[in-house]
Amino acid sequence: ELKVEQNPLFLSMQEGKNYTIYCNYSTTSDRLYWYRQDPGKSLESLFVLLSNGAVKQEGRLMASLDTKARLSTLHITAAVHDLSATYFCAVVGDSNYQLIWGAGTKLIIKP
Amino acid sequence: DAGITQSPRHKVTETGTPVTLRCHQTENHRYMYWYRQDPGHGLRLIHYSYGVKDTDKGEVSDGYSVSRSKTEDFLLTLESATSSQTSVYFCAISGGRPGAEAFFGQGTRLTVV
Image (cartoon, rainbow over all chains, first blue to last red; front, top):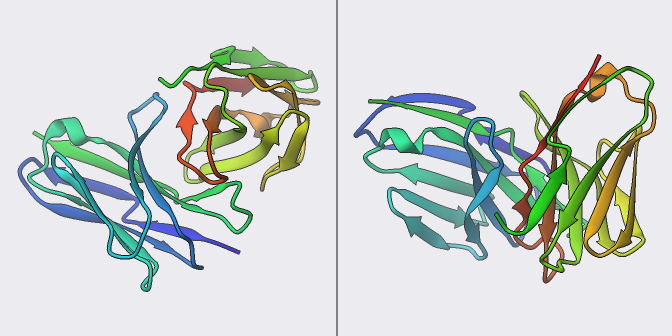
């Protein structure tokens, strides 16, 4: 059974700092997604990572995938308050019809 | 938002009553999903559909049923609502291959009293 673990689950940081969120998964999968959710809002797709070594960047966020280690990272560079949100990773499950979700990382960036 | 509408957006209902939530899409996507979101649990799949009248159970399907009579509509029914079903419910759609990128509706906040 595929399990997805994110850490940390909660992160409070200052603007201007760098930090990384980790997403580990337990069995092989060929796709990993990162989503963002603002409080009281829906989920928005950020990145799709399709292969080992894939790296995607948008603004101050960069996501990478290491399929051998079954690990994805979401790196935040020089954080700004607007990046405060909950970030989820999700991996395609065994059935291929569903995504298996991490519990989410609540990120608070203080001005 | 990618053409997904959930209704109602908020609902308060009494224990034991049936409740139906509706998800409507205008994207003609094949796959549709119902999730619930609870603090500390992330997103958990209730049911999903891979075509008209083709549905299957997710990890937390007990107490829920679904129907999909048209491509654009996916209904979630709580047969007899319980307080443990108080949650935020999200509908999602995806096209192309199974497990493709999912797009989410705005959510329905359901409170069972």
